[in-house]
Length: 192
Image (cartoon, rainbow, N blue to C red; front, side, top):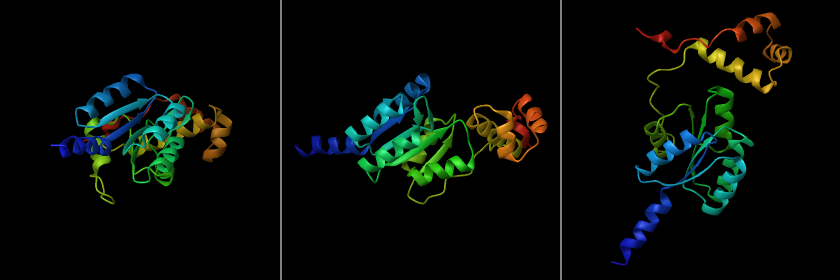
């Protein structure tokens, strides 16, 4: 009978999950959903708090927002990797682009999901076998939407400076202004 409580402790240890996201509603909703999937969840709302918790608990799993109020979730990836080399880390972001995905994977994340990601997709990414490719998305972003997202990200990185953004994108300033004045392309452009 003594082995069963120990088994439960090891199961809890192996299902420890750190969620770091500054969107309180999303963080709380995800925490509840992952607890219902038998994860022992701890959450934080900043890079500073995420790093502190990562060092204290060395989580087996982590879900990190890329853009946090006090920095980048990639900084938390490095701390988790130092505390536990075999941790499975997922990076979430509202800015889905290849450059950021590559940076997340190079920092040590095992996957990268665009927000809004649901708990099923997050759990599947966390528990997927090493090297397994995820299934293709049901509703991928259109090429126009990917381009628009990239332009918006560069614009934000240039502190919303149109001239600097145009220079970095190798684009005429007026063309960029026209693109920025429009709404995001619709997502259902690929419907049959």
